[in-house]
Image (tube, rainbow, N blue to C red):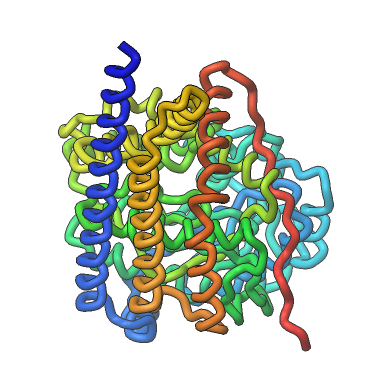
Length: 477
């Protein structure tokens, strides 16, 4: 009996692993093809700027950035938003009842005063107490919304949507540092799409280790500490392989809450962000897709392959675990709340391909790994391990993992997604963590995923706890 269960389990794990590898190779192929299409059809930054800057048809954009206790980085990040190169945009900073000096710093630095403002409650959010604008012309783009505490970023984002009046809005984290050409790169995809573009995802990387001057990354560098280095590699894989590959068949499953562009009207008709959600970015996009499909409208989702945004990631294991446990709870929530989309071709490639992939290879994988780990311990105790087969399987999986990371590093180099300041050292760091990731970083993520699933199943309460910011390096004068 036990021997039969053992062999069935081993064959299932082997088959699962082979299909997973095949799916990764498919995404590599699709991302490579998408990059080839982009290199032919999307011009360089200066050409994009030339056409969009002088056109009266270039859409206006509202940039929404919720802030809760962000005094360490708030001024640097608002200055970063001020330095974006785009002809028509506004910045909406939403103060979610911060208990530190966030609001005080904003008022003093930008000479803010309360102004009358007609607010239409288009989506659900906690009450807005006041709206402030600067008395100085050079800060005319800036709008600061002071609201009651909503507990989660989604509520702050909704308050920003209620204030914005532009055709498109970008939702970002206030700790993010935006590349000056980011909006041009995103909007070029919008204006050149044959179908209405309802969402654009931008490539994001870690700002940990970068040198910043006047709200801009002037020296891009891979972080010097281990945990952010692992995340840098993970982000490169996520944006340059996974999301770029899915976007090539209009099956992008997620536009990061860190920096993403949305059609305001479609977002509002879909209900905006869900303030109760642990994965508000995925949840809203899936509701937007559901709305478009149920109303019979064509739409497009796209991914920008060049880095548009830098974000400060968790700098230690404790903070990383808190973030990833929340993400795992959010994934379980998405599967529960949007189960009608999974394996449903009515919702296009997202329902037919992407969401089944996420369910099988992202949701189930941590559970299967935990079961496999416990099963392996039991086999070691009982002396039932075939070490030759186990080592061959482990070696195959390890080499494939390393190959995938090596590919994305090569992809980043060839596509020039990032202009690293110290190119050789940056790539050497990434290659180094590639070899260590399966032994250190991946087990941490697997543990956090299973803990997040358990917290969701046991209905444990959770609140929005922002990452404790260390701030970025300033360029020496």
